[in-house]
Each structure stands twice: as C-alpha cells, then as structure tokens.
Length: 428
Image: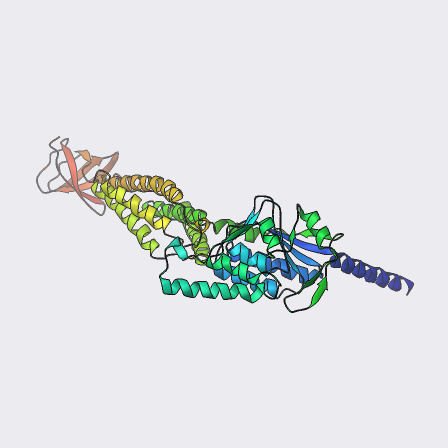
C-alpha cells in the first residue's frame, strides 16, 4: 500500500513539474522563406503545440519577401484565433517582412523588429506581375485594405498608415515603424525583446488584457518536420520545374528503351512530386502544352534531321513553358528565366540525342531471331531440287529453293518459314 502511494505521488509530482515547465516556455519557429501553404501549416502546428503545452507565447522569427494571399489569410486566421499570444519578430538584421510578411507582422499580438530591418510594400500584385485593369485593381486594393483594417485597428496600431502599404506600397525601417505605431518593439536580439516585453500588458484580439512574463521562459524551438522540409524545398518553383523536367526525361528514356525499369520508376516518382508541388502553387496549366509541344519538336528533329531548326524551336517552347509555369505574385514564386534556360538547353540536346539513337537502332537490320537469318549467306550441303540441306550460321537447316541449287554452291536466305528456310543461289 505504501509503495502504491509512493508511485502515485511520484507520478503526480512529474505531471506537476511538466505542467510548470510547459507553462514557462515559448514555442519558437523560424520562417525564412516565401509565404506558401507549407509555411501556413508550419505556423499552425506551432500554435497548436503552444496550446497543447500551455506555453506562454508563440515566437515567429520572420524574414520573407512575401508570398501567396490565400496562405497569408490562413496564417492570419490562425494567429487571430490563437489561444496564446503570438509574437512576430522580424530578424536578424537585414531581414524584411515585405508584402504578405507585413500583413502577418501587423496581425501579431506583439509586432517587433530588429535594427536594420524593414517592412511594408503590401500592394496586391496580379499573378505573374502583370498590369491589372482599373476596375480589378480597385477591387483588389479595397479588399486587401479592408482585410488590413480588420485586424490592425483591434491591435491598437496605426490603421491609416498601415493602409498606405496596401494602396501606395509604402515601406518603413524599424525605427520609422516604431515611431509611427506600426510595431511595438525594436530589439537588438531575442533576449532584449523578451526583456522589453516582460511585464507588459497587451490586448488580445478578443479584447482580453494579458500581462506577459517572458524574461525567464525557456525557448522551445520547433523545427519543420522532415515532410515539411521536403515539401518546402519542392515548393520552390525552380526546383519544381527541375524535378518535372528530370521526370519527363526519365520517362522519355524508358519509352525509348522499354524494360529498363529504373528510368520509368524515377520518371513516375519525379513527375508525381512535381505535380504535387505545382498543385499547391499558382500554376499555369497551359504551360504544360508548351512543354509537351517542345518534346514533339525534339522527336521531329531527331526523325527528319532539320539541322537544329526543330530542336531550337523545342528549346524555345520548353524555356517558355518553364518560365511561365508558375504564376506567382512575387519573383521568388516564379521560375527564373536563367533557370528555364539552364534546364531547357541541356534537356533539349539530351532528348534529341536519345531520340536519334533510338531511331537509328530501329532502322538497323535485325541480327537476331528468325528475322536475323534473312540475308545470311551459307552453303548447300546437298542438292536442293526443290528441297535439301543448307549450312547457315553454324547450323544445318532444311531448305527449299525455287530453282535448282547444286551441292557446295553458296546460298542466301530469302525467307524463314517455321523451321525451314527459303534460299536461292548467292551472287556474292
């Protein structure tokens, strides 16, 4: 009985210690990338982890050029509904929270920046960077501005100035943002920021007042999972295009050498990975038509040997297809023209080379099996009138001929009928 009580007491003490440790911790993540679906999933996971461990806050160290509006809205929705305070800290020195990053910074319970950082330039951009017509431009601006006002006001920050980032693409340094009440803190490092916030009362989005006690909290840094790292890597449009191109080349090699297996497996895996990534990105699916057309031109170049004209056309189409493949709102979410060229030119040359080899192989005379015997030269071992025996490629065959062949005369095979050959006198 005493042992049971001792065990129960130890378990209770362990639970209490775990709870106390969790309550004095901050869940920290680093976002140093474009804002896209995996970023939204990562931030959501951090907020959920903080809720489950009863942490004091979530700290997002942010450095981003911007990203996708849908992912940004999803992130802000999670931040505003977070059961624990969310701190967004633009760091390290030289970092930025531009475009979508400015929205995320302003949505946080606490907005902080390191010296030498900047934020703003949140004007909506049409996918692909094109120019919107006036009506659409006004609609998108008004929608984005209203979205900004919906959370900047309740956070007690400068609504009018924040809206100019949307309408006029204005940007601010850390000191300008602090002086004009767009952020709450400028801190040289993480520890400095936590000390400045320690004991500060903040108003949550739901109106509740909360006093922060963070100076002595343990930092529980939460990295991305392996799955998230892989997907985050693949969501770089340049990587997605490279994976798609390698997959297409591998399948092309499999079709030209059936039964090789390895190129086929690699091709299927790479194309599925690329399609999964492109499905999460703003993809122009019409670009796939250009990519398919480029491979058709490569095949025609190998078949008709147009001295590179069709091959060059294929390279141009493949480059355009890759360059226009991802229709991102910022340059970091598009395929770079240099990447498209570096992938398309070697891929085009390799594809034409492989197709040329395949076509030449198909044009060559068959040298194995029954068809390989046609044209073979041998010797009549008996008179053939019309049937007899011939010695061909090291074997003795039954044969027949349309005209008499005397024993010892050279013969050539003209036809194979089952296990019997049709021959005639050879003129060689």
